[in-house]
Length: 258
Image 1 (cartoon, one colour):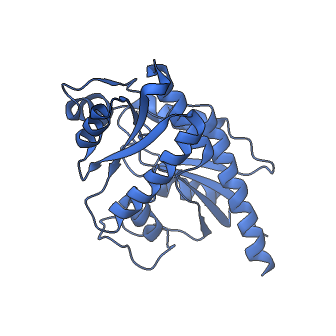
Image 2: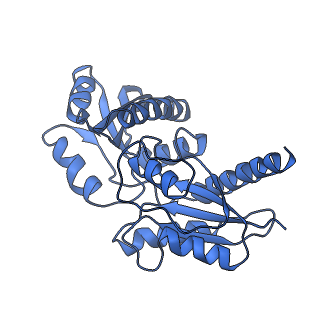
């Protein structure tokens, strides 16, 4: 008999409070049909690797693993290497040191957060406390980006789509910039010269070096609004995970009927 289980995959962080935020969000997930759930990380979290998650689910008799990709963008090279290591693609688009995982179950791959409407709400909820005059402001999404051809374009397309969503959610003008290749300061200055106060909205799941050091350093000397908050924690994350699981379950059902 087929038995499904959810494998929530995230990057991982040496910051225990961030790992706790992911685990707490997973603990709040409500799935219609009971199924095992494992939270796993690409690195930096002891005894919670992706292989640990696979092993835990298979130990419970899971035959079909629903991989929930808790990453911001399709442009992440980590998405590519995880898909390869899970056997979802024959070869990675970019060379990786990640070895294929030991796995017997069938894998069903979800997609990263992208321009989902709930993600747009999360972004706006995190940056809105910095807003003081909405009619004269612009929200500038700031993502990690990529220097690798192909991945950079995915980052750009995803950030542009999410900027439209955040604009619809907030009612403000919305644009995006990426740390790789670096155009954050250029974009911020352009909007300032056009008479707009810039609200910086980081597209990062965890607070850390990029939010506390890199972004402020890029904008040093400029006037901007910034809460410094990452997307997590947020009450909409469990809802996003639930919808991912439901969509993957629906796909498993269609595959089983074909």
